Amino acid sequence: MTDPLSSLLRAAHLMSPSRLASIVAAHGRAMGVSETVLYLADYEQVILLPLPGDGVPGRQELPVEGTMAGRSFRRVEVLTSSAGRGVRLWAPLLDGVERLGVVELTLPSAPDEEYEVRLKAFVSLVAELLVTKDAYSDVFARLRRRKTLSLAAEMQWELLPPLTFGTDRVVITGGLEPAYDVGGDSFDYAVNGDTADLLVIDSVGHGLPSAVLASVAISAYRHARRGMLDLPEIAAEVNAAVAGQFPGSQFATAVIARLDLDSGRLRWINAGHPEPMILRGSSLVQPPRCAPARPLGLQEGKPLCCETRLEPGDRLLLYTDGITEARSPDGEFFGEQRLADFVLSASAAGDRAPETVRRLMRSVLTHQADQLQDDASIVVLEWLTGDEQEMVP
Image (cartoon, rainbow, N blue to C red):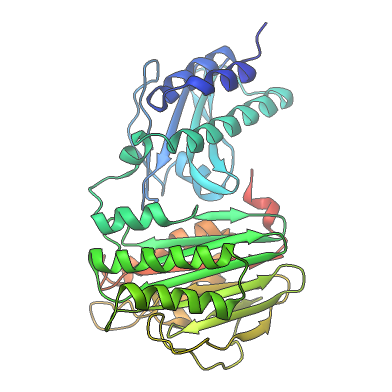
């Protein structure tokens, strides 16, 4: 008898992305799952959208807040609810530790331990297929957008790395708003051996010109980083690229950082940007005072590095001023302290970094009555918190 998991893996080689939901549902039935429905999170991570297909039961979109599916997504948990005479399992779809959405599995009865292990392997394989097939098709991207992206936002989303990455030593997660009309804000990261590299950037201006500037800057950053240059040389390369392509008054503020994952040694260059924020335990720790360099595109010579040392369990926040300078209708800024308090409170409540960032971006929007005056982005790095294993169910 052919094993359904092996059969699904073989079928994946010639699988059209538009048939993923149908083929997954068919292989689910071969495993005793009467109904299999995949839900993908929209760009703002507020709605879970069902992926249609032949043989897939029709479903409505589900909010992330206030539903079993949403709780599975938020808490990265496998949950069970009743389904007529059977049971319904909700499980998160994960690419590593990045949340893609959830899967709904309807079973005739609660699974025993051995069957549950096979179902989890099935769900993991489905998540991997979603990521793989997404590279060849617009099917999933079209489903995830609830309204039209601006051209600038399309460029920025294509430029981003996965929103979340984790190992047993570090978790990195980012957020970007407004999801459908972001222009000059962006971020990038890479983990190479014992080193984690981070970039948060805010290009001057708005719309397409700002997105083009950010694209050039991030591409130059990746080129220099992959050339194994040190931070001052990386900054100089990015500065030269921006100055060469955008003469005059166009520039980008940024923080370019590098963390040694063994020692906790953190080095960074601040190019006219908000200072990094370090959260230790339940406190905000101010990094050593270090004069910022000029923005990228306006520098003259290599900038100096700032340096400090993280302690195990620390959280490092790199962000743009669109978060801290978000202004309420009565003129109150969101501010650094509110940002620190939000992240500390979320951590104390048991929220992991991806959920903390998701809720933070919603809070920033709410603070401005859903009317962002500027792009807002953030990257949160958690080093040796001990919670890394809790990022998976």
